Length: 67
Image (cartoon, rainbow, N blue to C red):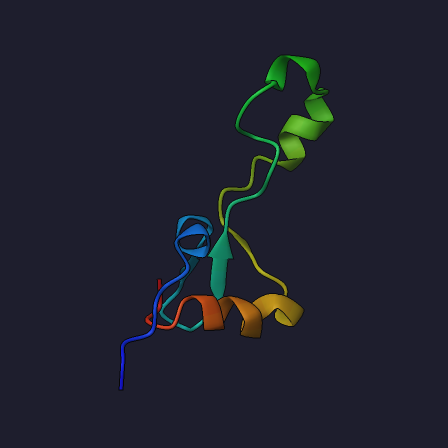
């Protein structure tokens, strides 16, 4: 059987933890920070957020070998 291909876009955005949760980075922290309010910047400060349970199966299909 052929090897499964990892989705490269998903590989850059998500990573799997040892317990099987999917870790992601929050959005709105890359650029254009001068135009954003302090509240917007503070809400995006969390580096290690987790993907929701509804998206978990889809992401795991995109990362067949654990990212």
